[in-house]
Length: 384
Figure 1: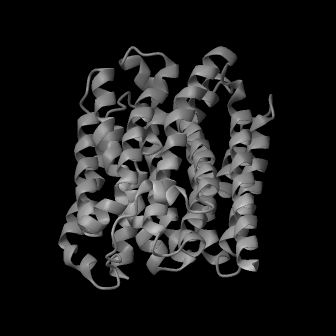
Figure 2: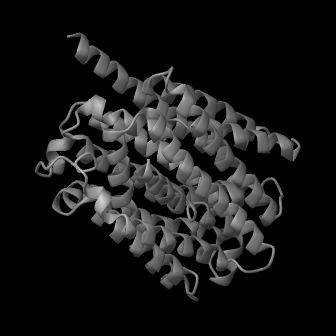
């Protein structure tokens, strides 16, 4: 139980900065003298570095240990966030995305594989709910400081939280070395070999689409609400928090549903509910409460998708391959986060942000289709 609490705290601290950029960018871009459409650039840099570290997660956890990877990642994240709160130039802000990205991929893959191997689906869902707690608090912190004209403190609070969690992890360092927590001491699996595993292509595509959905939502919801729905930046930040509230509450509920429903059923249900929420956001000229409800429903639908895909990985591909496959999944996820938000920014500079919900609908449909193809391939494989 003590280790579960530590892992939950790690995920809470990881979630804190995730929604800050999207919520604060309508103000931040003025200080950096950058256009609104430039939000995708720092996101792209951080995500590219995350891809590299995610692909290295299998090597790092087997060469060192899960505890070493987590400790190093938390240190890099805390340092990067403190630096972000002090930078005065856009290029320095982008530079700080390098340590933040490098720290994110390895700790994400290592912790997710650790839980997928050693705990039930309910623990995995509640783990990601704890991330949602942090991601929900992030925009609220942002709204508080935006009202006081200071976006920089939005990054100081997550940095302090990361430092505190780092000290807790260091204090419990030896507990990560217990036999139950230790990863299987097999050699790292080459990337080209993992990519040949049947079904990996489908799940990586699904992860690409789903995390592109999250990336566009986090980065552009605030701007969409300000420019298209004519809300103030603080109000838009609060609306953005509804997506994270829905995701967090949904993952708590999902933890109980996982006792009744399979991972595959939860993924399908989540995609359908998310699509309904996006359709609601599409409706023009409606009271703000309708748009808010759509954002909340979309968050509820997203709740089971990520944890259910991760938790099903050992069953779908084998425990001996799970760390490597999860690393590839994370890399595919951050490829979506890396390229789709800036592409959306470039597209919206031509079409306007009115296309925001339509792009989200396309991405969640892609997630559903790819996961269903994988499920049918696996079903056929086991029936042979």
